Image 1: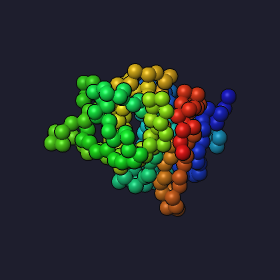
Image 2 (image 1 turned 30 degrees about the horizontal axis):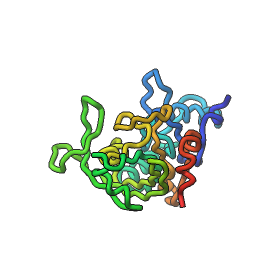
Image 3 (image 1 turned 135 degrees about the vertical axis):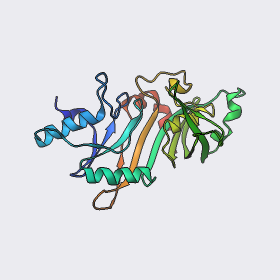
Image 4 (image 1 turned 180 degrees about the horizontal axis):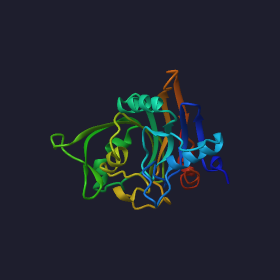
Length: 244
């Protein structure tokens, strides 16, 4: 099987490469155990263009290991610098889809989730990573090292105790979406690290559905969209069909 068969390529030219990252794969940092998406993408480029020696591929942003969806790499150092700047300055428009577990009516968690009754809104918090547990937590604003986190949400569907959300983060904090939702008693389905009691294979129900960025050389806006994993279409079939 060729490397092209193993990748879902969303966009490709001489300057950048975008693909649909499968859940369960780290974006980068090969440690000799799990294969990484960037190494697979390098092998794909080496094979396709018959390149001798090493292939350059710039990692300009990341998706958590259990998260799927649109992931962009740079194919030149100049493109890498320009794309990194866009992500750093918040110029990239990101749209995620998430399936969250609704807290049971009348439960303690339900008191934390009145926002879920709205069709649209925003969530704002301050986050800090707890190094010993490798978890991120919501903390008071004046906590040393706390970082602001903000996202916009739209409810796309509801069914049988699950809610399908469209999320647009305005900041790019580590585990931001997972923590902000879990802190309101609505963990992402399958996210055992942040309170879910459901299992979704090697993944959590968080998917980077689309990215819009400026092409590093032409400056034209590029939008890439990634289909949800097959497991979503089975596990969440009724929920996905509930969208108006």
